[in-house]
Amino acid sequence: MNELSIEQTRNILQNLTNLEISYIEYSKSPKDFGKYQNFLEYFNNYIIKSKKLYRFYFPADLTNETIPSTKKISDLGEITDSMNILPGYDFSVAKYFNFPNALRHKCNYFSLIYLFEGNGELTLDKKTFQMQKGDFYLIPPAVYYAVQLTLDSLCICFNLRQSFVAAEYKNIFHEDPLITQFITSSLAPEHTMTYLLLRTTNSKMIYTLAFSIFTEYINQSKHSNNVMKNLLSLMFAIILRDDKTIMDASIKTTKLDQQYQAIINYLKQYYQTADLSSLAEYIHFSKQYICRIVKEKTGDTFNTLLIKIRLEMVEQYLLESQLTMETISDLCGFTAPSHLSRVFKKHYGMSPSQYRKEHQA
Image (cartoon, rainbow, N blue to C red):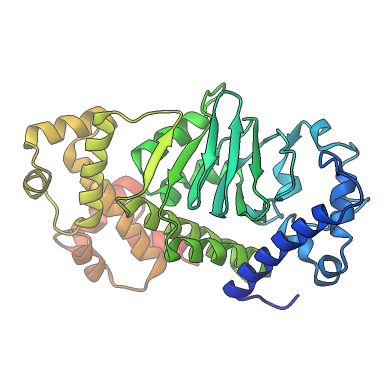
């Protein structure tokens, strides 16, 4: 298959929805979609076979040789990342089938479900959601769920390796307090987390980014895994900065979490010039109260938190640019290159120049 454009990916997904409808309507007898054999029969369609469109559902061709030994999907137990995510990728993207008889299952990875158009129902053990266009649902590993879609729906799933989420959730979800608390709780043994919902406006920017990620995964071009990760982070930045986005989860944030997030948001936006006085004026908290919030949430002083945020930006400039130490120190709020070097070495155990030499690609 030649490399696809974003628009071609979207058109193919919509055409596959039409093929699913035709398969159901023109079947001579009702189908049991709990059986793998009926999926194999669907994939036997000439268009799907000739264009290798199975890749929009699974990373590998679904054949008698590659399907699990069980005849029914319900016998599988747990769906593993090795089945649904290609080697060398941190996550995959797949189209949901619109076939009837939703199958209850669990995965050993995070499932991020996005309903682009149509309607559906997401069923957990103790809760049911009426899915709307623009909804994103994040389901943790080991949680049983089922998705039932109307025949005209278009729904895709981002299958995120647990190791990827554990390592990158701060970058993906931009340290949003509710999502951070949900992820960290989901990664704990014997967790009780079941869902995170983001109800978005389904803006053109959001669905364009979603289809861009899908296109990268299908094309499998050079550096596509890194491109996909950056697009995923950008998509959530767009979602989370929109005041119209509604969030809900099986865990709730406290007022303290929200106040701390306001502090973090300001410091990350104005790290070059930020100080305690400007922050207090901006968010209308006293300096003492800000320091108390930071101490309670991190165990650090305000100045230590600010230094850490500035050093994160220094690290980014070191890895992604050829800027001089003088320029970086000025951009990141340090008084001089010598000041930056001293603080950096204290936290990283080496000078900025050494760090750049060892880590820059």
